[in-house]
Image 1: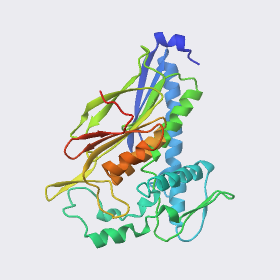
Image 2: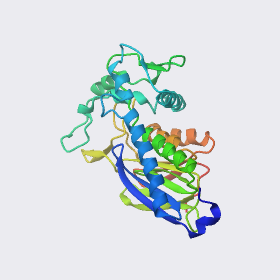
Image 3: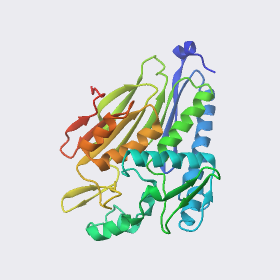
Image 4: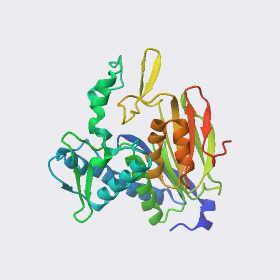
Amino acid sequence: MQKDSELQLAKAFKLTERLMGNTFELTVVANSEKWAMQKIRLAIDEIKRIENLFTTFNENSQTNQINSQAGIAAVKVDPEVYQLIERSIRISAITDGAFDLTYGSIDRKLWNFDSTMTRLPDIETARSMVRLINYKNIILDPLNNTVMLKERGMRIGFGGIGKGYAAEMAKSLLKKEGVCAGIVNASGDLTTWGTQPNGEPWTIGIVDPDHKNTPFSYLNVTDMAVATSGNYEKFVNIGGKKYSHTINPKTGLPVTGIKSVTIISPNAEIADAMATPVTVMGISAGLDMINQINYLGCIIVDDNNKIYTSKNINLK
């Protein structure tokens, strides 16, 4: 293990890899590049293991087994999968369904967000699409570690929480391996611990939604996670209006009015999971919810570039 006193001689070593359909950048503070890369490789293997459990792109994954048995039978899953679903349901309850694992039930053919999409579906079609979205229809059996989706056609997906969970697990592994400081950055959803080699906190840029490679502000953080959900990653312009790929699970229609939501939390899984529901809930309800939860902070940029923050955030 690298001692804190040794970190004065240390450097930050980085490795970037495509994982879970996203670019992960892992940074480790260490004296030896060889030692650092060994540890990063272990963390990458951990992220790949998690991806195999939760992906919907592999028909043998536990997620797809649950989906294929929707309305038919319960599926026995690993404790890790069961517990993440259990925590996700708790987040759904807190956000009044604005976060919902069963969003996977939406028909992707109607929401492709590319150049072929020239109009929104009508309100009735959109409503019929979200009929199967209901986290209360995920049936858990704690005695047998089984998961069942109540209705045929239901699907779960971990797109709203999986990256944060993987980042948190990779961080946990690196800390167990003796890494005193580092960052796991999952395409902007990141978690930090320790300090930079010079002893300063990590400096995290908050993305400018209009110029996604340029931060509009910075946060100094350590032992904290930051996640951003924005309409700059995937969107469509229809009738001169920009529609985000974030769908309101109650209406089936894209969310408007907010360009980006950034959540600051001690835990990357929570930060990742809370960014989308705040976007769905809107500025007033979203901030009201965040202000009632200890250790959570929030920065919102609306369509007019006005910035709103939770009561515990002081932007520089």
